[in-house]
Length: 268
Image (cartoon, rainbow, N blue to C red; front, side, top):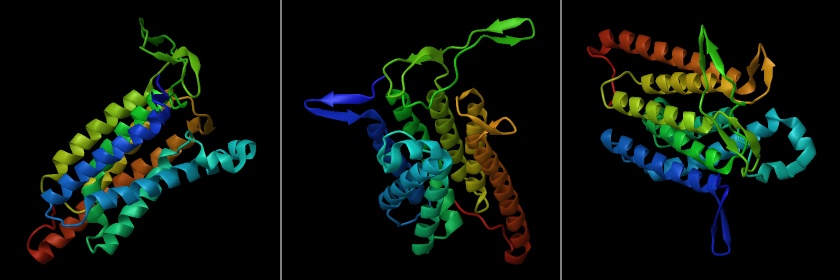
């Protein structure tokens, strides 16, 4: 674990550093998406605004989700380097993209389609910051897994030098989310390069990202609040459902418009 990089007299938090790398990677992918779609909007500016709004939303959602922490730390919790809620970042980030797409007269759905691969890849890279800093976003303690007559011993790590140290081996869930984010981003990038109904890429992003987070929560140490599920799992389930609805809506809308226009509404 490496919560801070010590450069001369400076102590640079690795979480913030990886967040910066994630933003740069997302801006690069977004720029490639805009160029492929012949869109002249400034991708770097769009990503910069979205990242700032998304970080603010992730922090605010975390504060609302953990009122006990706010009562203990007061307003200092807003400036703490730990404590960001995935769902808050998603909602606020999407809202920022929608507003910018509307302002640029690009269209909300088309903007979100173009941004989906960048969002997935940026999120995955950002999780490396959680891993390096050991901020508590890791999994439960490793236990032997029994399947029928077989016993497996999953690989795990301890985080003795993390911001929130743990001395037993736990599931390194940020690494799982890194892999999931990169795979989802790769899939969305390939799919977005082909003809598709407007909104389809957004729907797939909401579905896949929500599903990945829902599954990883089973081995994370977040408290269970309803039906044995954590807050993050409930939010992820809403993302999965929303994604399915958007996918269905995009396909049906495209099919209904095809007879009227003589061709299916598509975007690349």
